[in-house]
Length: 476
Image 1: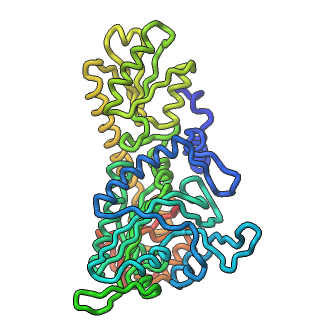
Image 2: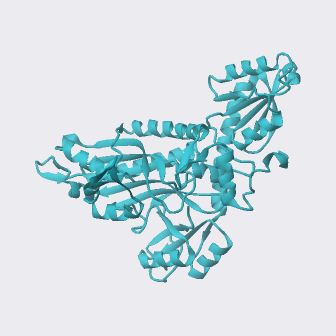
Image 3: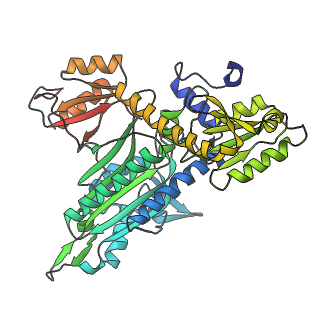
């Protein structure tokens, strides 16, 4: 790829933030709207979300959940019922104060999340242990009034799914929390080629109103972390606040145990920042709207376009195939589909037709190979599998190279200054240390991994007895 084709994209080494902005706009994923911090999802960006959504929806339904839809607005009095929850969300809430010209008697919150709406509904439909578990999910938009925004990563409005469930026992709710975190992890690793760390958030970082929060964390190309999905055991806090009670198997009244879990369009931002390069976007084949783009060469010559369209028809049954038969030059087309991250490009011209072959070009490595038409479909399928696996292995290697160990606070600060990425360090469990580290270094606790190691006996900050291994990083 010659330099002239990528002159409009800032080098990620020069300015990663500007590179990201260039890619999301020039790959035609989004456009900016007239509302600050809001984005227009263009067809290509939305098609990627649809593929993620369809795969996740399938997995959610496979685990026994049903889709529902809750209202957009929440009365202020309803939101106030769970104290910790409203305190956690208060700075991000958007309020509706007028309906037409009339001032409302009670403010309405534009949902930042729907726990209270589900809780109110569950109260009216759950009466007996026979009504449990209730396994619900909704696909919707939510609004959080963020001060600093960036497309996909942090916007005033975003798309997501939020699961809400009720259970008889704490153990059942715990199992659900773990199950859905694993669904998210599998989607990230198997389909988006994003390796993740699974663990528990600290008390400070957990979801407002939750008993505990489980998370998957991924590492971006620039060494910053991104929370990629969360699953919350809510305990009985909402159940007590809203009176969600049922008659248990002993005939006594008991409150339910609840969970909630969510996965958002910010995962597209993760995909961009993990796999993208200085030529633009790189989309993993399993999630790519178009897996193969056919570019006819010398298409003005007799038979070339017909041949290319026949190839498209043959391949479209098993491979998501596109064709560009526009009058733009091949060089422009190559650049366009490299920018959009389409996994494979197929080039075919008069000489290829004579020799019953085509040229395949990989987006991830740029490698070209000539393939016989007789073996074409099998070769493409194998290449798509190879690209998917390569993207995952490359991302995993990058994460491992950017994961360090710090046993002292001086080591911690030195590592953070010299090498971006995850830092594994021991922690005493006291929020004072957590706050101190964040205030002084900008690094936050990402999670306490489920697979714990004992790197030392002392907290990296205060040198008191250590209780947990924590992954720390600067984060989006």
